View 1 (cartoon, rainbow over the protein chains, first blue to last red):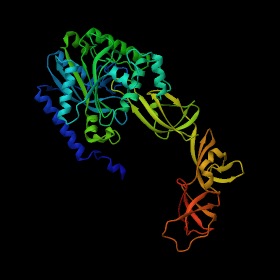
View 2 (view 1 turned 120 degrees about the horizontal axis):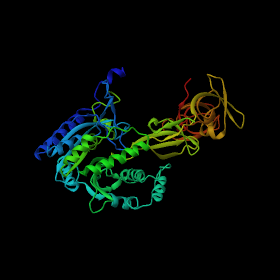
View 3 (view 1 turned 90 degrees about the vertical axis):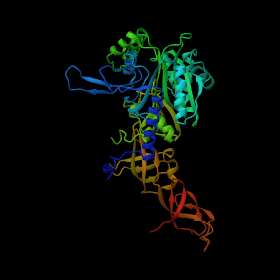
View 4 (view 1 turned 180 degrees about the vertical axis):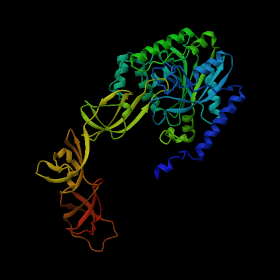
Amino acid sequence: MKSKQTWRPVTDRVVTKQRANLFSQIRAFMQAREIIEVDTPVLSRYGISDPFIEQIRAELKQDHLSSLYLHTSPEYCMKRLLAAGIGDCYQIAHVFRDEEKGKQHTLEFAMLEWYRLGYNYLDLINEVEDLLLLLKLPKPERQSYQNIFETTVGIDPMTAKIGDMQTLCKESGWSTATTDRHDCLDFLFSHRIVDHLANDSCLIVYDYPACMASLAKLNEDNKNVCERFELFINGIEIANGFTELVNADEQRQRFIDELEKRKLQDKHIPPMDDLFLNALESGLPECAGVALGLDRLLMIMLNKTHINEVNYFTLDNN
Amino acid sequence: MATYNTNEFKSGLKVMMDGDPCSIIENEFVKPGKGQAFNRVKLRNLKTGRVLEKTFKSGESIEAADVMELEMQYLYNDGEMWFFMDPTSFEQYSADEKAVADAKQWIKGEENCVVTLWNNAPLAVAAPNFVILEIAETDPGVRGDTAQGGSKPATLETGAVVKVPLFIENGESLKIDTRTGEYVGRAKD
């Protein structure tokens, strides 16, 4: 009997309606601001170098192209469009990340990503706030990464000795804590800060340490931090935005460093995306961009605790 | 040495932690969008019963614990050890007082108990959820008093003491819920 039931969507009408509403509200918001919708490919011949994100590969039967990569965000293609002069643009895309499964993680999820020319990350935070207002979500508090670390964990994330951080990690349950600064910061941030955010909290954390810059521009006055922010609602990471790095050489160097890290961890080494780097070389206009997880946003709006509860179909029944 | 990778973690998995066998109760995946992934795990120490929380970097491996749960028949107690038999292999196992812990007050022989074996030795014994035991000693029953809800202590044939309604007589057989230690009712033949 059970096998005959499983074709049904797991969501009810309320969820289905809210999902539809959210998508149309976002489209109306973007249209009113003359940000145009784009729709870039999901498959790419190139991978990403991020040492913490694993791509799902699609196998091909064609001879010289053995596999393609499913995108983990539409960032590279959208930046190529920006470099080609498309102007402000947004995309609602399904993205894919291997090895990510849990209450707030699923291998495939819906992402809203948008870019604004001439904006920096602070301008974009204001725009994210406008979107939250439209969606009847609270206005976020703002705290710098350094400040929230100092007030919550009691250490300065920029200057703390690695030994002290490792001890703190061990005390907080990670008994095999390493001496990798980035890992320790990630552990303390998620276990000592995000975990303790209230169930009705809305917070923007900004000015992340430079080692977490990814594709963000470093702050010109303080190279220890990057112009990056994240939005947390009810303790769930919802959005991540930057003033975008437009310097091609710096970007290429970061890719090389990241690939080196992947190599050390014995992870898959994808071909570097030269098309993306060529676009930066030809000139990506100064801009800021943000990616926002729509399934998680729906979880918040519908008061659900598992991401599978806001998707019609999940990998368990698909 | 058998190991489990964090991506194999799920509730019920038996692993070694600080030298003790543990059972995973809950496994939560924690990962910032751009950052290191962790598995936050709640474990029950199978020796002490204590629940602990540990975090692992995703991709780490930890030692597996050779732990099995088998249904076995309780045979007898020789004053020091409690003896159980695996009904499929007829192999006998002896459990010490620490392993039988709470279960020992509910079993008199022939019950099917779940025995947790660690490295092939009994680590814990769970009595059946319900047992039927005779009363060895209690105050005389108060006739007609079925509605008033008063209770009195009764010592069972195994030595366990439970609260029973006032109308229960000496020598009666009772059904007991071993998880709560509560009287459920008179045993029906």
